[in-house]
Length: 332
Image (cartoon, rainbow, N blue to C red; front, top):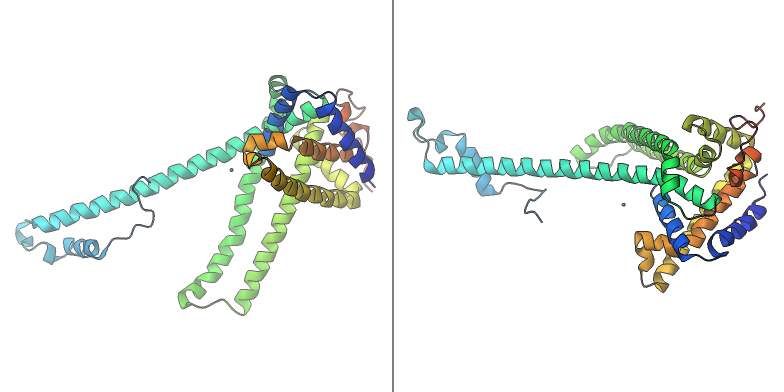
């Protein structure tokens, strides 16, 4: 079993050394910036999106394509009123098309922003590990040195993003198909339909929980293994899986303790917000204010990982292990 008591005590000692022995304000802000980036991996033009033509426009639209709108249809001489109505309708169509274009541009911008956060978050993970383990405040050197593994992490996150969307569609689409008859008949689903919907919801929640735990272990253990031993994403994932299988009880307890620390950190964030007049709500400044707690939590995870063996001791990153890829005995 992982000695969590030792990990708690060691994390406190490391946090004090990194931030307070000696205290360096510039170093504090630099490490805070790397912690902020790492945290990104853990945010009237006159158009109406709900446009509906009014009664007058609907009537004009109907008259435009009827004989009433064209009193001299045989001579192809439409009335001025019908032509005006036609232009009004075309204007409405163009307005609706503009709305669709605006939403498409907004969606693409939002997608690009999310991808940017993923990319910065992947870089931030390695920056934070470098600053913590080597007890320094640096951005430029580790930013370039760990560019390749950070980009590999970013690619893996893109894959997870696409797979997550696909899984969501697989669960949501059957539910929508089942709900269509209920919407058409204006009554709540019942019987077998309700049972299937409940099972779909429960299965989707289970998948989300498994996804969150897997992503958490990837961030807390796999990325440090890439940092420590120069592993690829695939190799780091396999090593993490072997750790989980080697000590499933310790891993489960680790996840629960980190959840408790996350709750404590959330409460501390609220308290810090009250005492700093909401300064802690600002993204980067909030990270700087809470930096001791953030460093403590990260050191705790690294100290738990280090107890699996020398090849997992992140604090000796500059000391290469004898066999970095497969340091554990095969599971039997």
